[in-house]
Length: 280
Image (tube, rainbow, N blue to C red):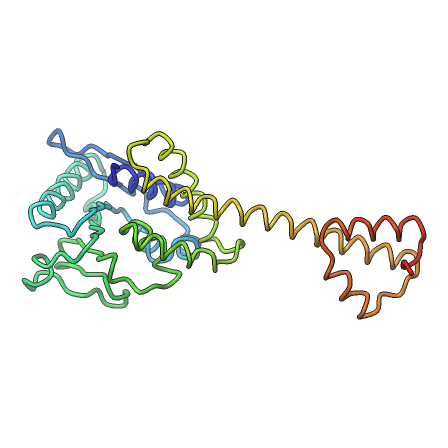
């Protein structure tokens, strides 16, 4: 399974509703590509925070995001820094502004990149959660160790790019989100995109089953929301009929209405409509 492709699809799905996102963005010299390049700094920062948490804050500026399925090795980190600086050079040449801000480079690491963190070159980021590290400010690059992130709502959109075991834990957290939560909507749309892509990847049954399980969970929740919405509509219709026909709605009758399923509510509605009275 191409974890790199899965990460690009996922990040594009999460970020593209808010900012301009380019995947596999070419950088000169030839044969260099950035996983994800956030090319726009014009965004609704509040909406991005509410929907994507710390990922949204990361992408509120010109940003490069590279995802690694293992701990980031030193040579790969250097390659990414070279791409960052090459891209900045291109943007500077193409822009009439002076100076052009250096796009921030984010390396998402599955596992702790010990060699990067122990030589004193990087340090924990101030006012960011545990697991966020940054180098010198003038270089504008950071590492996110996914396994170190606290298990909070605001880190969920990042932790979903971690290992399969961590994704299974996230599935439990996802069930606790309210369907009206912007994060729930953003992640559910991303899971749908993952599911579509994975259907064409028959060689990785384990990964496909994992994402399909998450996608099915989302679909079940959508069905439940629609069911509850229909029940709420029937309850309101019954109370409206009672008001029109002068039928007293006692606390006991309200409790009875709330306990009924969809079929029983429909039957009660028809009885009240025909008899213009509460059924005996």
